[in-house]
Length: 615
Image: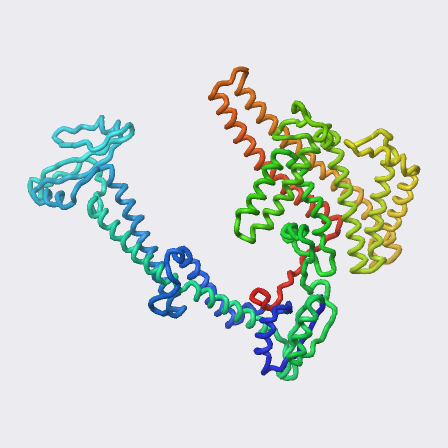
């Protein structure tokens, strides 16, 4: 990546900005101009276009031809869509209100408000009442006429019928009245049907308007281009009383030939410079397999320009950690089959990398299941007539071996992290600056070698003969002691090269304290790999045991059905929990333990060339 500046005359800047946008190579350095009135107005218009497009999208598949009978401007389409949506919302609110009224009147059965009004004119009054059942039974109903409409264990709905002897002498209801409402059942149904018909008419209009979907999409794309050009134009630096304007950005070195050809055709002279660590954008360059893990890198953040991309280094660890956590041959087969089915049948291109990554995780889960001797919660070596070829893959049948192996993996990954930190320091600050991480690496390596020298030659982690390594090295204790002392000296003398030499040993003692507490803690954190695999296996075994208990000694048809339900439901839950943990915990080990060893800072800016989205 190189920093590049282009000097443009003010009269030609708009034309060249448009051509740079079409080129789609230069990542521009832009200013914070979001408060500019022109940008605010354009963003507001784009927001309205997006809302209009989202509102019309459900109706576009039903609209038929893309051609409209009447050509409407985008603004008219947007305005009519907003008005229609408001009308639909109003009708739906009315429908909800009417449905509530209908539900309130439903227990009273069908009645006509017109008939009730006619009876009132003849001096017969009808009122609706609700009482608790016990209160109704205790009430004195002498000289009162009641008709029970509905009765249940809790309450009684009833009607009181009274006669008005004269306008001045009207009997008052014995109990509080229930409101009848303004409409009877027939009118409610009529109004509900009217509102539904109105909504259908409005939705038909939306289907007609949705034929302008492509025009709206085209206008939205043009607006995005205008916004990008406007931000670039407002970010230009003016010189020579505004006659000369400077456009600054970054270009990958691999794209220089295409850029040079573009500049020569327009007689534009570029000024190249070295990018700063913090301002230069990042363009990750990884192979096909490693590229699948880049979304995991982006969860934490991109590396800064001068930092080494950690993706190729944590990718194999992450995949194996996932498989070691899930660690079930049966679950791994399910993941592989599901991932392959998604690759074959899911048409969305954006989903393909996720499915490919899932296939890698499934393959590693199969390996983890074989290593840890688990198949759907059952120990593989307990399966009758197991072939010798499969048995040879069951490397860690002893749970202690699995625990030691997870610690060994942690030591290896942390050592790899310190190697990357050494390389980063060398690239960024020079040879002296990498002395402190080199000292930490030598100290950790020396301690590991010293421990190897203290082990019995017969000590092994599964098939890995760890104890024999110390024997083969011969004087591993002495080598380890020498490396440790060298590492301690480097830490004491070069922990902070900005400080005076006589202050560094004091600071180094504090650094050594941090190393002595942090690194063992980080290494022991990798035991979670063993713990998750053990928990998943034990839970799977418990599910199998429950199913066997249901079957009993003489299983019948129902026993098989219930046992199958327990197996399917239990292993589904266990798989979901184990898969979630198998992703989250390797993520934690990567972002905390590994990144701490790497000294990862992150915060890099993604390479986003001007016009690259549309070029």
